[in-house]
Image (cartoon, rainbow, N blue to C red; front, side, top):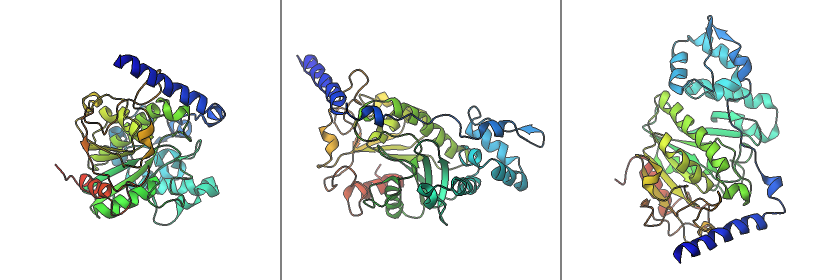
Amino acid sequence: MRRFARTLVTAALAAAVVTGTAGWASAGTQTAVTGPPPGTASWLASAVAGQPLPDPARTSPREVARFFAALDGERAQGLVRSHPLVVGNLDGAPITLRYEANRLVVLATGEARFASLAAPGRQILAFDPRGRGQVAEVFGDLGRAAHVAVVVPGSDNDAAGYDRGRAPYAGPAGMARALRSAAGDATAVIAWTGYTSPVGVGLDAADGRLARAGAVRLARFTRGLDAVGAPDPVLFCHSYGSVVCGLAARHTDATDIVVFGSPGMRAGTVADLRTGARVWAARGPGDWISNVPNVEFAGLGHGADPTSAAFGARRIPAADVAGHTGYFTPGTQSLKAFAAIATGGTR
């Protein structure tokens, strides 16, 4: 009887998603941006001192790091000037070179929607203008940080709007700023809008297709951090971003994975994630995500509720969180706990 009831619920979920989005789901369906950045063909056709350049699609971040370590400053700067799109997105390349390369790329696009990313003082660790645009921005000194946190956002985030003037702690950049302020100067926080996220609440948001593509990119990104000597990161994964983190979990060296406002991680329990990281979960009392059935049927839905006792995650207090995006609001229990986790505490 319980299995029959579960089947009815999952069927209802599928029907609700399909019928409820029939008018706009096709128009809102996103094509995942994957693979190496634009300019890769030109990069591969080039060489330095007679040596081929590392293939962005096949060379590991550690091998990339070794390649750059063998270059003198003049040759490295030459690659930044001639191939900024590749250098700026090449996991394992030196951090400062990536900042410089991405500033050049943003300025070269000439697009008003990206212009603010080139403002003085911004540290853009990755920037890909394809599609709606992808970006990773560092808050703090990544090269000297004792702790590193990565914010992985959910739907409706891209390079143009991830830092737009909405509620100040709701977007990826706002979340990152709030966490850095709460965790202190020894922590660098990265707002990683590095995958193609769903737009709106439609089939893309109920499906795992974009999350699977995002998980590949997130795993490589974290390996890139490791390759340049950054501390193992803590992943803070919001909403659909928690689906990305769930699929990437076994492929990262994260010390902790924190999910909040999560529809599920495509896993039934923490053990199913096959990760050595500590897994934490939070859900505010007014978060609308609680109305989403925690089921998976015909590829729709993302599975068990990470805040349930059966899932096995460590619970984070969130009784004072407002809505779906209030977890980083200063003064909340959740932000206090996030800061403690980011700095290795609450063991």
